[in-house]
Image (cartoon, rainbow, N blue to C red; front, side, top):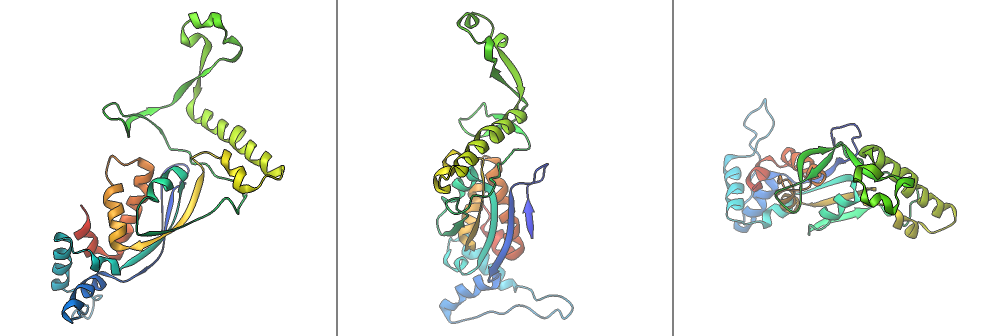
Length: 253
């Protein structure tokens, strides 16, 4: 299953790769301390096997009292594609295994993340963003910029530019052009990549235990998390709900 950002570009993507274990794995990891093992309830001959009520209660008890080790026996893996600035926030989470594409070895055409909208700065806090959408910005007016003009209004020697056009122009004409000039000149990819911005798209395999992913989701699904980073966390949490519904419900904060 592929989950991706809704919008004109659909650039941020999370793809489910694989998993091991289930809610029953969590319950049995706890019951082994007493030399016991549970099985799925198969009494409904027309329906799929279900987790027994006693095992669901046990999982909730484990989460409530922070007995976390049993949750480490269920695993999942995802393929994530997102901008570098998102990856550098998510890589901080410990106990999650991370293998990322390396521009030391590849020199194919870089992709750059383009937001659906440009959000305004939050007025009531130092970080984060507001609901305000920014559509234009001021750029220096070239020949009209002289010392005499410093006495004039800013609008006289600055001109308005569409922010999306300005961003695309910088990416295509500056960063990409310089990158390809370096590559064509024979500069090694591991140094040529230095001119690429934080919005360059990267991708990685991300694997870890249920408890480790839920620690990440509980932190990164919060409303004050950067929007692009929150997208990845929300996609992963929704998939974890499908894989381990009882455990995720117990672990969500």
